[in-house]
Image 1 (cartoon, rainbow, N blue to C red):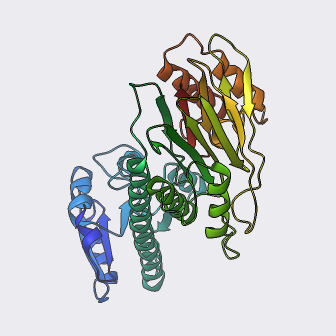
Image 2 (cartoon, helix red, strand yellow):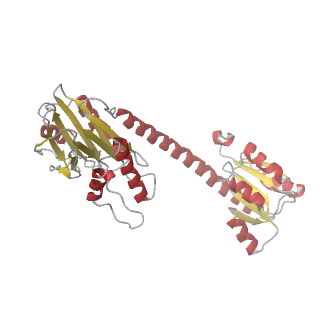
Image 3 (cartoon, rainbow, N blue to C red):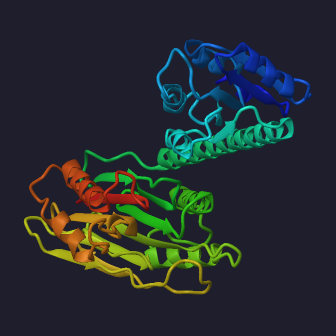
Length: 387
């Protein structure tokens, strides 16, 4: 970290770059008597960058014409180096030509002073630019801390997700790509007992820490199976208990959707219920026909709601997909139109002969290509089960 980032005193640190010793002394005389201003001068362009890195100025006063560089090369040097790019650069020149000023600003100069200005004007400009630069450093530090906290929150959520299942009579694979910030998607699957296998995927409204905290809280209750009065063999009852425990907060308006199912190994019957969530998609073995396992109940957040169970019998090698709306609510960057839900069904059905992971990766690749960005606008969460 550069030295001036660690300084706490409110100072203006002025680096003067001019080949004239007289001018350097004059500017130091104008500024140096002020208790909040520290000056340093260099008279050769080749020394300017080293001085800027070591001194850590809050503003650089630079002569427009230096004998050991051509034209505006010194400006380009400062503005192309990430270590000095953001430091305010004020040009000092005896040339009052508007074209010269325009060229200086075009190369990245922040201000232009015809030398030598009145002392009060010079003080005002130095303090103005220094104050803005220090405020930017404070903002950047705050943003960096926020970004680090969000990254840590995202890693925590990812760490709570289950391991993939690659052996046994129920296989589970998933692809989870968080959006730019933290979101509200969460999923898991687990044996309830020797005969029953549970699974769910939930999606909290909105983005950010609030959505993330709610999704982790709900997910933890389900993962640990600690919902009072809920029979985890009964999806509808689980959703009813959730709706009473997690009413929509009138201050934040947070709610969530969820699809919850229980597979009975012996009978091969899947019992499920949904709360405002996208339907699970079922693709029978050897077929490209996609069945929608509808989520008919309202979202979780309304107290006193009831949720009905639905049953379906699964065949050998049938595949089922749970996902959030971020998997198919993709806006095409060329047309501006959102994907149709049938497009998701076609992509999944068309991957019958592909390796499992390739199927999911192809879907993510299609979403990124359509959006025109590797970072999606919403969490991308999809789980594939093979029975």
